[in-house]
Image (cartoon, rainbow, N blue to C red; front, side, top):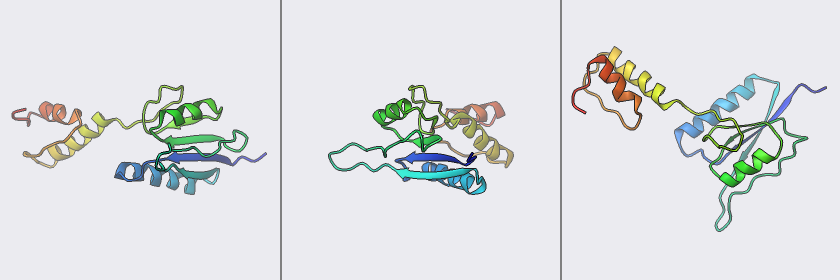
Length: 142
């Protein structure tokens, strides 16, 4: 019996650093774990046609990691019978998801600045950042 697992990675987003980082992390994991055989598929939107999924044969794929926004594609993956994890959103199609904890990331960033003596700094977007600064007593105004 072959213990090697074939994992399909579907993505449509590599133009943000975060998406590229996910791709690098998955590739690094697959390189270091010979039990994984990683198959990449980059979904491209063509003019006047929706993004199309590659054929998914449950007999050839042991698992799917995906970072795609298309609800129709996520629904199709949910129905294919292959275990999958959504790395983009909480898909609500019975597929487990793995999402970043933006508040925890913001707290780590705020702690770094506070620990290193920064008094004047700003944040953009993450709700945990100003609350962590307020706890430290360094938040003025709001």
